[in-house]
Length: 571
Image 1 (tube, helix red, strand yellow):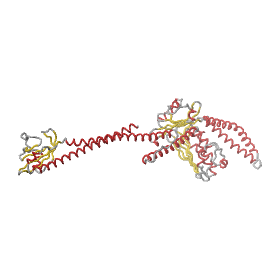
Image 2 (spheres, helix red, strand yellow):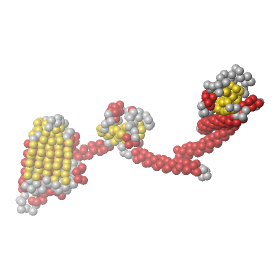
Image 3 (cartoon, one colour):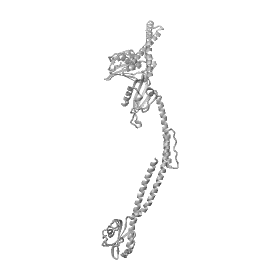
Image 4 (cartoon, one colour):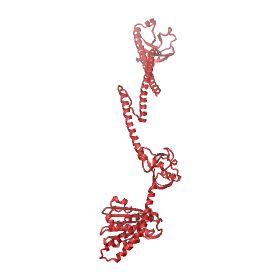
């Protein structure tokens, strides 16, 4: 670094000095050339004054110095030439450029190669008169004399050039050392930041520019250190949260190389380092290929998978990275271990089924005996109302137990598999008849619109439609309305039951299909509901791979929409 700065600084100084030297030389040469031209003109003028009285007086001059003096008569013949003692062999000069200019009254300096001497010379001629005759006085001087005069100046300039180069070298060395020390300070400062220990750079406040630059660097590096600390803190928090999540997380890049994992993921699968292939972590080839396919197609998918005796729910999706100015995509794999939840759910279902089965026999006995007692007791008897209460509650409990048993069968898929083509309009009318008395008592307007046919088990589909219609009647207002709309196309059958009843608050809708969940317990008790109706509906719809949607507004009624696939065979 230091050598590079010195070399570059010296090279700049050398080029600058060389340019100055060349410019100085050219300027000095031009100045000397002008001085010689001025000298020729001045000497010509002096000589003209000397010989105007007597032209022969020129011959008495023994030394003309560096100039050559020539006198030419009106015919162009040389009368006198200081460079030659004998003028007999001298050419006629009438056509020379400087002579022509002098004759025309426009004297000028001409630079021309001299055949006589074999080098360039400056010529200047002037028309004069002497003794009544016209003559041309010409003065010449060697062009090389310019360089002889210039040489002295070049010597001094050359000495100055060498001195300037030496000085620039010394200054460049000193400056480069200073810059190198400052850069080393900045480098050490950045290294300190990387190691977590930040120390501001020391600087001399006497140098205003240095003070400004280093202070800005200190401020910048200080902000960088704060940002670095904040990033590390946020990173530690993020990794702490990720490692303590109940879900396993695996993040891969576009080449399916691992970027991030958490403790749950490494406990479920094999341990793998960042940068390794995903196959190194997931040793199940079928699972790896399924995840790879979703990532390559840039889709999203949630599926269940049994992995080494564990029940997993795996959510695979891709995420764009355009927010951080890159076109790369990141693959996210979320893994939930639901083995314990499934086991608990299985135990609950077994308890639910066993308890229902065990309760069925004593409840049947209580219902039968209370019915016998009720038939043998007078209505006026004080015991009649108690026996009737026992009978009513036993019937309600018996219905609840039967619903519980039915739900257990639906969950286990241990249910009738009869297939027949059913007219859903007939099932709706049958359900209407089941609630005819209540519909009449409440003066409810019951309307069935449309037509639909579905292949399935009549008992299951009737129970589904009956429970939805029953709720629409039970929780309706007097003078209300229940509308059943049937429709079908080539792919699905749709049943929509809409009522004008009391409605359901929005916060209850996500839970109303759970077992024994009741929005208004007092109202449910009055209507004789078990709290299992919509749970039965949900299980039957799932049995047929259907879709259940409930939309309701408190005080304005409820709409229950059920869609069945037309080609479903899973009843």
